Image (cartoon, rainbow, N blue to C red; front, side):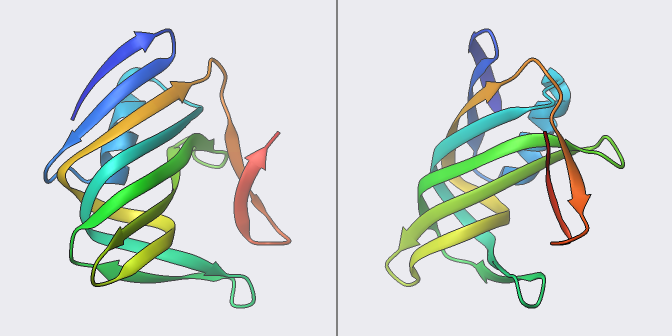
Length: 142
C-alpha cells in the first residue's frame, strides 16, 4: 500500500497486488489517525467475500468469488465502534466479470489483483457506530 495526502484530509491510496482490502484501509486509518472518513475506489480484486443483509434472518448471506472481479465502484466509510473505540471499515462494492456477472453488496474482504485506487476524504471529528437494539446493526451515532 502506498498513499499520499493531496490536501488536508484528502488522500490518494494505492493498494497493490495481494494486499487485503479491508485490512489495508484499516491499517491506513490507524497510521494516519483517521476516525471518520468516506472513500471510493476502482480496480480489480480476487477471493472476494461479498454479501447482502437478510433483514428477516438478521444476518448477512455472503458468497466468495475466487475469480478476478473488475471493481466498477467501491464505496465506504470509516467510523469507530462505540463499545471498543476500534476502527470499523464499512464498504460496499459493485464489480463484475464474465463468469459471475455483476456482483453488488457488502465487502467483507478481498485481495487486490493488480491494483485498487482509492480516494479517501477524512474528517476532523470522531464518528461512532453503536449497536441499534431494534435492528441489531451497528449504525452511526449522530
